Image (cartoon, rainbow, N blue to C red; front, side):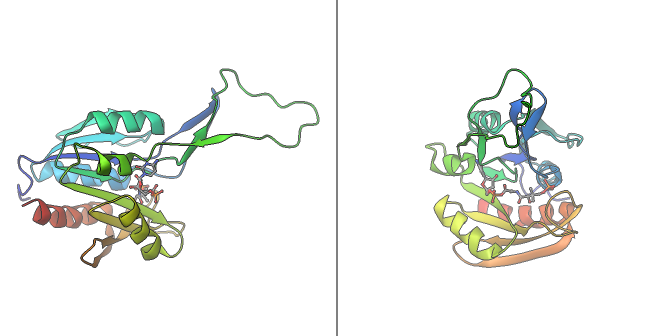
Length: 218
Ligand code: PMT
């Protein structure tokens, strides 16, 4: 393994966030953390100093990685921003876009005859866009885009809107890629063009992505 990232500080986010409704229930998503953990592991193996901000996942901490566990989008936001400054931020986490306005301190009970329940959700902070707009902006800000359709088009929109250097688009909702799977395929898009990586294991893809980042950081 090369030491192409020696001396480089990288912050990676991985996994889902859980937004609590009450002590028994939450809103979450299907991210296992595998993609982000693979990026963190490969970056550390290449000599980078890696901080991994992890949502609730069941994965061991990769060797040489400093891990900060969080649960909610709000906690992930605070942990990522407090890990700055860094040379590169890689946002592989599937952060909830909305969270309940109120978390009930007690389990919400069904009322007799109740057929519906209204939950009021409020927007979370966009961690990736804030990192990209920060006075401590890393030299590279890399996002991921999980899409079920028009993958490249939606990802390109996020690249521009969130002012990213690169975005890694991946298709979700199909077996063998995206959420939970050990394998994935990425379309890495920048202002200069795009490059398809995979299909391959998430570990292999992480290595290929870090090769691209190392070139840009050199
Ligand atoms: O964890 P795995 O099971 O291995 O699955 C990997 C993955 C599919 C989760 C991963 O490859 C991936 O695509 N991660 C991003 C998922 C996502 O939530 O994409 P998005 O299109 O909703 O968000 C776009 C980008 O903005 C992401 O970099 C996300 O981290 C970031 N974001 C989104 C909302 C928010 N409030 N803050 C953010 O930083």
